[in-house]
Each structure stands twice: as structure tokens, then as C-alpha cells.
Image (tube, rainbow, N blue to C red; front, side):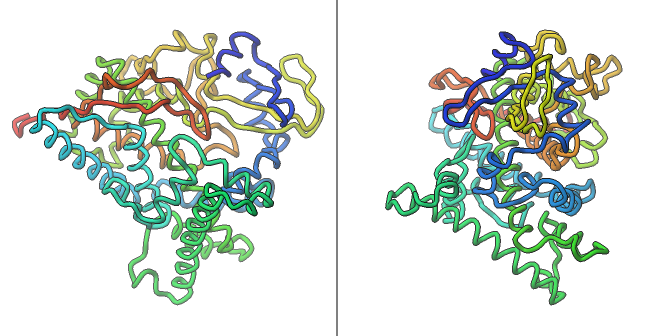
Length: 462
């Protein structure tokens, strides 16, 4: 990633030009990032020009809201990601993960009988399972990607968010509406995809709100998905102004889909890639989880108690090297100074957790994959970098930190713990050299092709 190279070449502050969009300033100093994200976040809001791109895809939800609107929305949305709320959703993580593994088992078994290796597009497979999970947990919708569904809704979503990034056409159409007058097939398809997803989410939101008013929630069966938790939180709010409107609810559901899908799938893709390059780590990880789980999924309680410290260490090390969202954007509201350089008002600031995770002054052997750096001598997990508490920020920090961190971590560890017990994934001979490419997420490029081989399961005797 070029931000990491710029850090090495130019230091903590680097100014560069982005074609017609003007200059940007990359901030890599950890104390400067702390000031922007934690100490004085209101002084450095997200730039509204760039937030138009987010609104074009997901409406005005939590990611793009600022000021009082952000505070009000976050208070309601945070209830959807509370510990107990995620605990109720965890069985979906397990069920969808096991469905994926069973699909792989069938494919591997059939290929083995035919005497040929099983080759999987891992980016695609991780994208499928995480979309299935976020659809069910966000608003109770079954995309059924792992099962091979080719529904209109699934096609629409994948048109909007192809693996690893986003389709820029909907953004362009929203920013420059006159383009919609051009009868180009790609423009027509993008408009239809946006309308399909937007109408589906709004239809479900309106039905849920009406059902609550009629005291008939899904035929008497309350749902625990994120949408219903937000509805219950709004109903319990003492001030009716605190409730989210139907449009705000729909925007936040679409935000969950966009923010909670490719981020986890990208982290998992990098994990399988790094484990294939470091088979000793893969073996150690498998031994730890199989010792307790015997092929089963970990329970929510086990993950919450950190019963698998090496599993957590692997996840933290992957996200240090390849944070799914490699940068975040802010803007100065006054003339300012960073690293001894004067920075004028209205300057776009680029903060990169990816560059931060590879700083040689914060990490020993920063470019090496060493999960053991996260394990204390007593075997417990290291919580923070001893050189600086904010050296690791894949979820950012402060009042704009990722609100779904607990959800994402449990999903990530559940998927990895189950997959590692059942399947060995190695880089396929036909896989081209992999490099990092950034769009919305930082993902392996080109296709990460891996051979899948079933792992012999332990006997009942152990």
C-alpha cells in the first residue's frame, strides 16, 4: 500500500494531489491521529463533499451523519450492537458458517472421487457467507449466496458492491443526475440495482414499524435482528424526537449491509492467505481450537472469555497488517499544524490505520506476520501495544470508532475457528501473485485462488 511507502519516504505528514479533487494531507503520526479521532473529534469532522459518495449508496445513516444527528442516531444504533444483542444474533453466525463448511465438504468429496483438486475463489466464498450473515442479522433477509441463490436482490447488491469495493456508477449518477439521461446499459443497471435494494429495505422497515404499531411483530414471533433492536430502542426512548424515522432506519440498515459485509470477508481472505504462507501458524491455531472444540463452533461465551487467545492473536495480527478499511477521511475546520507543518482550513486529511500498523518505531519486524506478538508470557492476550496505546486502530477510536466492532470480531473468530478445523486452504498453483488493492476495503488482488483439502476429524476418543 502506497501510504506505508510514503510514511517511510516522507515521514508523518505528506501532501499529495488527487487529480481534479485537489490536495490531500496524509497524517501518520500516532499522536496526531489521536488528537483528530479522540481528543478533538468535533474539530475534525468528516468532509461533506466526500460523504456524498456514502449517501449515494446508503443514504444519510450513521457513517455520514455529523453533529447532533450523529449523536442521536448513534444512541439508538448502539443498542443494536450491545453485548446482549450480539449474543442473540450469534447462532446465525454459527449456522451460516457451518452451512459454508458443509458446502465445501460436499464439493471436496466429489472432487476427490473424480481425482481432481478443489479450487476455491476465497474472496468470493468469504463474500458470500458474510453477505448471508449480514442480511439475516441486519433485517432478517436471506440472500442465500452460499446456497447458490441468483435472486434479483442478490444480483442488485453485487452490482452495487462488487467484491472488495464499490461500483462507482451509482455514485456518479447521484452526484451528476444528468448522466441518468444517457441510455447506457451500465447506467440503467446501476439505477435498477439501487432502486431494488432501496425499495426492499424500505418495504421491510415499513412493515416492521406497522407490525409494532399493531402489536403483531412477525406473527407474534419477535425478531432479534438489528432493525428490530433499533425499533425497540426507539420505542423505549423517553423523548419521541430520539426515535429514528423510517427513512433513517432504512438508511442505517443499508449502511450495515455496506459496512458489515466486505470488511469481514476481506479480513478473512487475508487471514487464509497469510495462514497458507505460514503453515506453522495454521497448525498451531488448529491445535488450540480443536483441543477444546473437537470440530464444533466456539460458543459466544467462550469467545467473550477469550478462551482462544491464539485465535484472537491471529485476527489482531491480520488486521494490523491488512486493516479491512485502510483509511479514514477528516477535514480541518481551522488553520492548523501537524508535524511542524502549517495546514490551512478546509484541508482534507487522510488517516491510515494500515500505515500505522507498519511503523517500525511502534512494531518489531513490522512487515512480518507474527501472531505471538499478541500473547503475554502467561498466555493471555495483549490488549494494547506497549509503545503506544493507539498503535493498533483497525476499528479506529473515539466517538466515530466502529460501532459494530463486537459484532465483527465475534463473526470473524467464529468463521475462522470453524473453517480452520475442517479445511486446509493453500494457494493454488494457478493463483497469480497476490497484492493489496484498495477501494472501499483493502483486499487481495487479483482473485485469491486456493486449493481446499479436508482435514481429518478427531475420533470420539480424542
